[in-house]
Image (cartoon, rainbow, N blue to C red):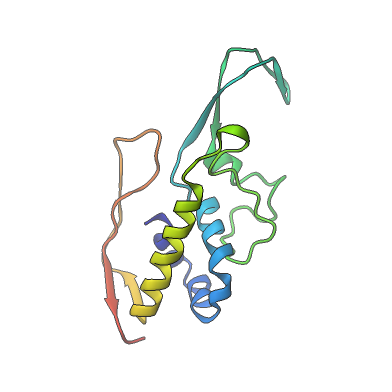
Length: 154
């Protein structure tokens, strides 16, 4: 849902994807980076860790704000621009290291299948109303509903 909404809000990028399906893989990575479904990643420091000017003592909780890491101007050129061809795209949506999300391959495969099927089936995909975001979840950032108008014409 987050990815579809992002494509619909950036119609030039959506058209670029429709006309060049080889961009699907980097487009999915950019959707994940630009509008991540998770809000934060929690870790426990196994040893003292210096992060910039802040010391995170061993045993302390550290909270990584996924959306913030995905918009870091030191990691991304024009981080607030949605670019389906962005390279490199080293987002940390699934975390990193030994506790990386076990479902990351499934997410990518499902997104690829869903976007391929939608683009194959419908020549026209547009918003049919305002999206409704979950408001009762602090750990996830996603849509409760995304009303779409689908058609075969352009």
